[in-house]
Image (tube, rainbow, N blue to C red; front, side, top):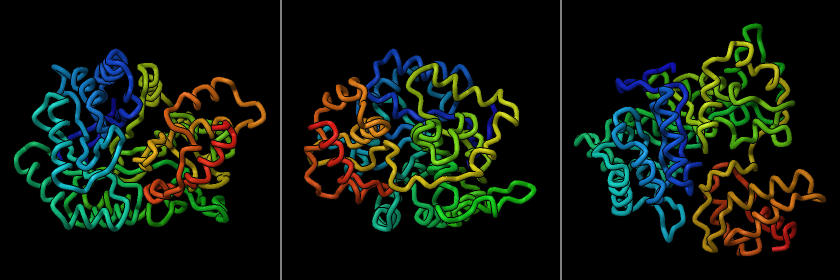
Length: 380
């Protein structure tokens, strides 16, 4: 494993980290396998945002006796209302779920207390000008958290957070599809002899990465693989799919980036991510693929579930996932896809078009339209 310092915290993290969202609803045996292999292979950084007690408890069991070997990003504001993922800015609720995280993990500290999902002016104001930041600062003073971080998908809001001086760490969504210039800009016009992709980045994102480097704020990366879409010939916005190694290398070449938190649902996927460490420069090189950029990810679901909670309890990410698969050939949808979709507790037809999901979505996904399409396509 290769390690990098996390900003000015004095903590070092492996360049390959572990995203744990795919361990939700998995049996303890799977959680044990994934975390055990990760630890054995030198992975020492993981993110845990899910509010469900079962997955938190399973991860705590998997870390038993090895807690000191893993740096944990634990979120303040990720909550579970009526068994649905939600975000809260109520201090009492935030405390309840953070204390629950400590109990489930059987620990008395969290390495990085993450201010959760700060993507809007409203969220920034409530967290940074209210009581939640003060709560995190008090936790740090007590030693309950070692450092303060925040997660965001919005470069403007993320920059404001970094500029407060309160953060040691930022978790941000980085991949070439998110970073590249929008449609209509010829990427090839901006490539110089040194192949400096900094010139092709969205200017707000480029400014954010540089600011983090300047201020000693480390970046951990979510959405490294674009929810798997960058690996898919059918879904990639580029001329051909990227490999896992190329996606990881892209993120690790951004200023201030410390670790890529790759979501793994099996030990095999952990090993696949770790293969990056043995790749030569040719295998890591993503330049030939992203030269011919075909679009951006705006409007594409990356299955993050930030759109929840849904008043009709629709698992929007799952509906969109099955819709994406079906869209590859709507005239010949695999029976298994139909079966899995219909096995969901709620469906596209249950949508009441309240719009709450679209307000929450960081990627401007037309959720209501997608629910209507799913209902028509699958008949329910």
